[in-house]
Each structure stands twice: as C-alpha cells, then as structure tokens.
Length: 261
Ligand SMILES: [Mg+2]
Image (cartoon, rainbow, N blue to C red; front, side, top):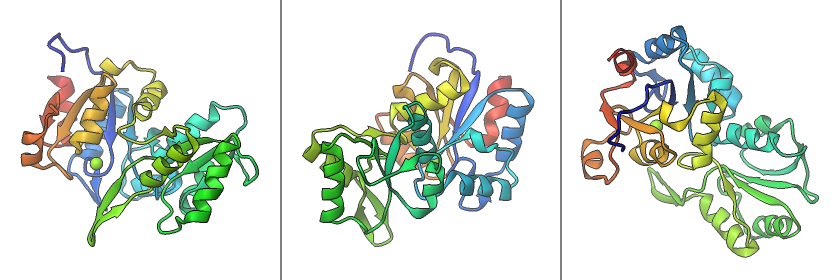
C-alpha cells in the first residue's frame, strides 16, 4: 500500500467465482455494477483460474446468468496461454489438458513430434511415468513448457489431493527448464489483462474474494487489491493475514459507490 494519493480508478479486474457468482447464483448487484461500468465506459476484464472450462463454456455460463460480459473480456488460464502463444511465431503445441479446454487452442497446430510448446493443465488421474517421460523428452529436445497454473495441491471433500503443479515442478527439475506459468497469482496473468485494457497498474483495481491469489497477486504488480466479503471471504483469515487489502468492500455491488465517492 502506498501513502501517496491514489490515482483515479480507470479500470477494473474482477474475479468471477465468489465475486460475480457462486455456482449458478449471481451475487446481488453484480449485473448492475457491470452495467454501470459499461455505461460509464470504464474498461473491465474478468479473471478466473479455472482450467477445466473452455472460454466458450464460460461465456455460455455468463450469458445463461444474464451478465453483461463479452467473451473477450473473460481471461482464464487457457485464454491467457492462447494470448501468450499468439505472440510467438506460429507455434506448434503438445496439449496435456482436459478435452473440454482443447477447443481454446484450436488455432495452433498440435503435434507429438518436436512441439515448440508443451502446455500442461488438469488431466485428472492420467499422470504416469510414461507420460512424464514423453514430456521430459519433448522438453530436452527443445520444447518450452507452459503451465496453466502451478498449484501444489487442492482440497476436496475427501481431503488434500496432489495438483498438476507437482508434475510441472518435476518436469522443471528433470529438464532444467522453467515453466511459463499462467493463472493467478502469476504477475504475467494480471499483466496480460492490463495490456489488454491499455492501462497502467496504478490505474486499475482488482476485486476478488481470495486474499492471496487476487489481492496479493494484484498488489505484487502495482495494482490496488480490494477484497469482497462474499464467496470464500473469511473474516478471521483476512484479519490474521499479513496481506493488507487496499479496501474491504461488502460486495461487487459497491462499484458505483467507489467511483462516485
Ligand atoms: Mg474467487
């Protein structure tokens, strides 16, 4: 946090899960806040860390929930990876991702034979030695590694489960190559949204319900991070955290008040 007078807010990055909706329930005031931004020509992008839904299906969901969000305003790890790949010279890819997210990468040539990039996302329990060895070979023979995120583990009803980030780390260790990691809280993920809006970090506020990946991730690139008290927000956790949100707001419905204050 800076003590200097903050820049006017010129744009927003907004988390989807827990801020705009919880499952299929829209947070009260979310649609109205987004509409307010549109009417006032304030750019916004919507960030999610999901790697199991294609951009097309995420867009279908926001349409089904009658949210005034355009497809190209949604930034998911697969979408960020696609934006990154578009900047390369006609790259070929080997995709290690769920069937559903494969369509996001349709514009790139897919190959098992000396791909330029190996792209890793969630594939459930399909991980095994021969797959790791195949990917390792591609990396040592010249491929670069892209990880849709690099989480170590995830909490499920049955307890903690290993995440694909552990396999990414294993491949980095064996090949000596560092993965390009997309997804929150990777600075590149926030930066790609800023680039897309053409705004500087100090002009933009990130609104999220996760103090670590949303608030801290945004603050690390020089943006302001606002925490909402919806979704996974937990009062005790927020209080005990070393991360200080720039503001804590009751919900996304506060947006008009933030701008008119
Ligand atoms: Mg969230």
